[in-house]
Image (spheres, helix red, strand yellow):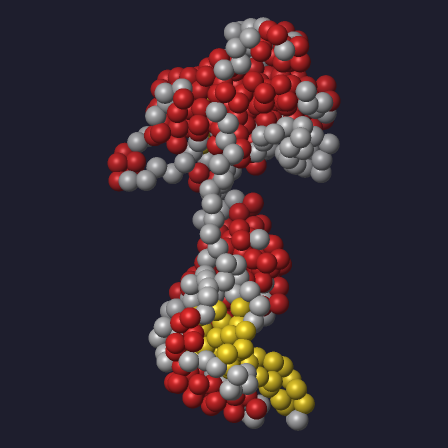
Length: 453
């Protein structure tokens, strides 16, 4: 909504409509620089003015006065006049708070010294990264996501004291609204969660920081769970699309994502030594959550054949990279990195297939508890602590995995025979081939030759 100008009173503010997206300003017609920031769920009295030093404009600042639900307009107006008078004299209205909170003096002009705000966002982020994320084994992808938020989204705040943000939460509210407009609601919420976590961690060793996290002032964007999974009735069309892909390694990668329900980013880094065909297991060493969440995926017959086809094609297309990766590619890392496809070519990929796995598991009669174990989800509740997952892998969970894969291929029906591209890829007896396994769990050398499509 566009900004409005009205005489601010308690009744007038109560009648202001909430914006559908973002925020807008209701400026007072009586006192210049006094306004209300109107968000979807929160309204804040605020002043804005130009700080001057040596008779010249140094900067324009906004200072929050208080929530409209906690302070009357009359009281807020009186405070606004006082704040605006201080700003006109070149003094930050909250300079004394900045100084007293850290025990350090303010500058002669009334602003805080460079060090009076205590720990900066950059320092807090580095401590959080090293002392919390790395020490607790968070994955490189998770750390990189946090780094992107801090060093890109909040780049202008890197050397700002966290105390300044905590005493002027309107900055955080405005930033969240700006990110929402520029990058969308999910990026805005995600970056604010990062800022909230860093602030909370910093406060543990910086007791001068207020207990009220400035991120608490924002109005969170609504986030809808993505509902893009397939049911069994959708699989015929999807398999036809998949069979038509030119790159056979990408084809097998998408199929294995569907059959395993695993996160695609974890599957991209599977290595040959992670696969034990004798035990019919594949090890995922660094899933979401880091090494401490490492787990094994039991393999159905269809999943074994999928991996064999991927390894065979990898040896033909990228022989050097295939020695190190199950899904090799001509990339800097040597493995498949970009898993996105044109939706017109392949309608479902990535996390769509993870959702599909969960949906098909229900159709196959697999319990919600077993499906969560197969997907390495955290199991809530006290009783979950008594479940030893690896004791269930060899028999129970593998049988559940086989039931899901069986439901996937059963849904294809006559497509395996009648659809030429699917038949040439998977063959008529797609799930019944036998493979020769060495004692160490590797495939016999001739297995790649016998596993012709």
